Length: 156
Image (cartoon, rainbow, N blue to C red):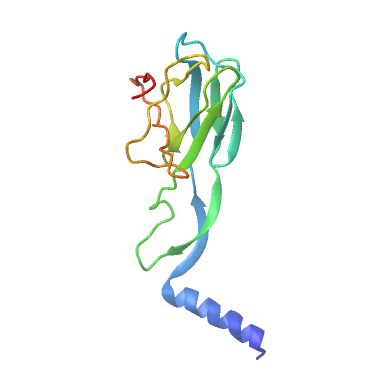
């Protein structure tokens, strides 16, 4: 037996003995919602967004939908893990002309059954920030949109 073949057999044996298997893991589920102007409540058409690396564009009614994305993972079968035991939240961002950019850490399945509000660029209000300090380069990340959300004046 060649050294290469022996190495492949050894690797396969380790995977089988440890109970590992490679299978599809659903990283983000579906994402859907509607983007509206926070002041007027009108839909924002043509807003660009990103969810787990998938790009979307809102329609005339401000609605968007992102299909499920998948990837591969080693699943520890003997450890009692299933492929969806560990949700993988992703960063979501929405930008539109004449509006402040909105970005937050979205849950495993981002199904917003209420409008996501964008603040006009000319507004003195801003989006609330996460208290846990999730974000890049030490900057707090914006809070996830909520149905009853309030916007803050500068300095809060």
